Length: 160
Image (cartoon, rainbow, N blue to C red):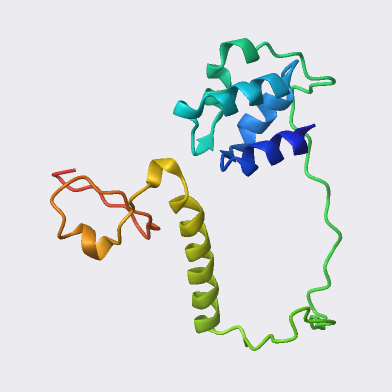
């Protein structure tokens, strides 16, 4: 059921927070809640949070989770690793047949930039982010703008 719910929401371009997914799975009728979220096109969030799920009043009647434990389970023990033995890694198959990278910094940069571009395309399709512009053009515009970017570091200045 949880997979079906996640599939429905992601098909509509809604990302789901893990807490929201848990909250949905504990509802008596999670599909009714999902239907209500999808029908509310005006307020469809980019990322569905736990608060959004709780906001749909008809859907928040939760059934108790079976065998709910109060204390968290300890992590399973991992098998011991022989640190003196040299690692043995062997590439069995490259499904593309054109793996050319050697694992240097340029390869990681290319991978990072490709993933960033893919995520940017997904976000640009969202209604909330219609009309995004590059940062270089945003500096010249004297109005409110929408940007897609990745923060390297956050700093707070005296002017905000």
